[in-house]
Amino acid sequence: MLLNPPCVGCCQVLTMSWTRAVWLEGEREEELSIPSNWIEDGYVRWPKVTNAAKYLQQHTEPCASWLSFPLLKAKYTSGTLYTRSHLYERKGRALGGASGQNQ
Image (cartoon, rainbow, N blue to C red; front, side, top):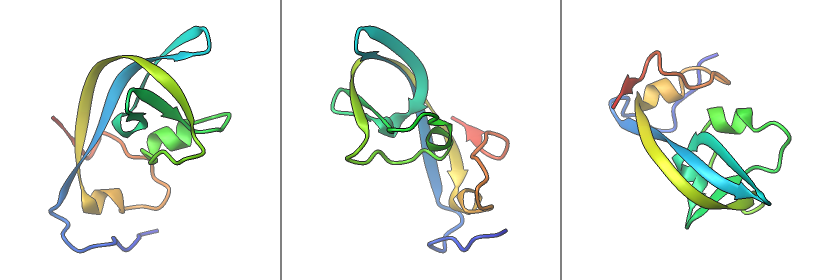
């Protein structure tokens, strides 16, 4: 199912960046590649759900109800470029590197 993009301008390029982060959950260190926008003011934000895969794939913006964990280290950050038309191409389709270009 095709969606209408919220704006015209299919040539507009967006960067969806990921960061390999290490954070502290209680006494345990966790490490994972997460959307870079999940790191705010020295904290990793995490949704209050059992399985965060959908939120990770969709690069969901953190909200006030999300958990916060102290960021210990951001190892590296990488991004993928997408055109706005690609982001709104199909409903429910996870973003993948197949049609993006690596930086």
